[in-house]
Length: 183
Image 1 (cartoon, helix red, strand yellow):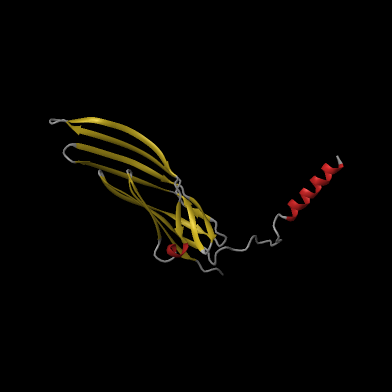
Image 2: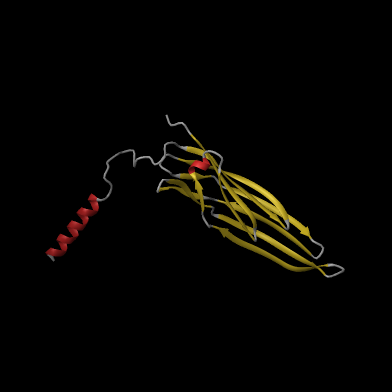
């Protein structure tokens, strides 16, 4: 019993000793030279049916690397036909991103989870030679959580871009940040 008490005592002592080496009341040392403000811009486009829509949410990054995002929505709609098939897509993206600053091996970047909910209705008709026949009428709910990586240097100069092109369309995210003057 005594050896168990001694083991628990030393384990607690080592745990306390390892819980931060600084009593700095302001928290850990800053990871960044500045606070930043900016935007995360989303452009969502498609060729068939054709649509091209954009939205922007605000971004704040403090010198400790904590990221705070606004939220937004993007509505899109397109209807096209090629003489044989007609398609209509209507939807809404609800954007609630979150992220963090990551530094390692000299590469400073932001890992951002787009945390986007997709609610879409897709309808497809086939031309039978005399009338359009409804082939598909479906409501789709999905999420985009693939994760994005933006370079700090690019974000503060030209804007850091992450682009994905898939069956849903072309999805282009751009993070743009401006350093704030720290008093």
